Image (cartoon, rainbow, N blue to C red; front, side):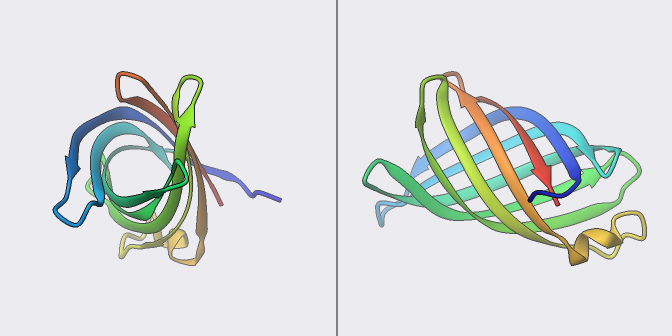
Length: 126
């Protein structure tokens, strides 16, 4: 059973790169909320594709409008969907922010939908 909704963001994929080793890198940024605080998120994912599924690692930085920050590190799977792409992920977080400290003890469960133009929306549950 999923826990509390702790984050919700919308954004756009900004960079796509095919790396020399055949992996695919995607970077994005967006705006939303984390623990009810207005925030900015930027992420980079590096993935390989097998059987029409991308499997990779994601690194994200979330900063609140009041200057608090949290790093998220996770693993994700993505695949083509009718609307563009679907992603499911899990993450752990590290922060020294008093306002976000509880995230140090949380495993995040993520769900993102991306359209064919690279616009995405996602939610993070505890």
